[in-house]
Length: 297
Picture (cartoon, rainbow, N blue to C red):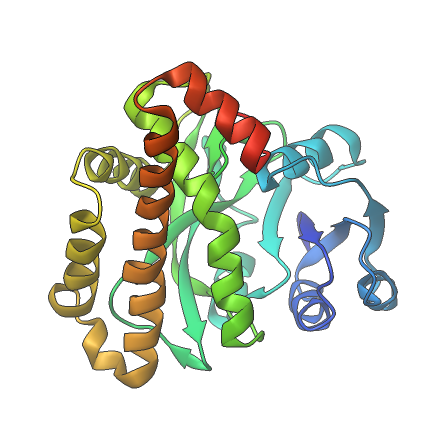
């Protein structure tokens, strides 16, 4: 076993949790499932795979929930791995970690993985792959930044090391669930874009992002300055044609259309709706987000 504690946040993840735990049990010395009062038996399945299950009320976003876990769980390993229940490490990545982690240089504080999206049981090889995300970090050296969406682990010191192999985001729910998830995300994404435009709140800039996360954040700032609705269409064209998502068949079209055009258009529609009600008044926008959508910046 490697000197790793895995933290998995859950809410009704019966469909995925066994696969995830069977996967990480190959390398982790300790596994915590931080559950938000699941009603589908997620907790019992997790315990049957040896995980410690801790119940905690949902604070409003994943960053706060994960940071709560860092502050309140007993973690005595050198490394901490963050995974979602619908994610798993490929065998090649597991072998790579077993090879590099015991002897990794002391100034490495975070390890970046490449994420594969498996959609309708097909790997989306083009369009956005590879997404590089820092998911493994030394205890005391990393923490989630406080954001509603697109949150990343930031390091307070040290440097990151990038693994060659991948982990998978492979959700088994149906398309209705996938679309509903993006409807729920849309208002939070709209709030983030409005925050970029109007500086609704000031976020502390502690630590540093991985290289790709920083690049993605800069692109998001650029995206936020583009015209509403045009930008979502242009983003779809970029992913589908320029980045080659069309080569992933019908599944590639569905994935890119929903995630790259429909969702982004829905976000812009939310921004448009909020601006119609509030104009460009930051105080009114902040109040509407809080009172009508339950989003506190």
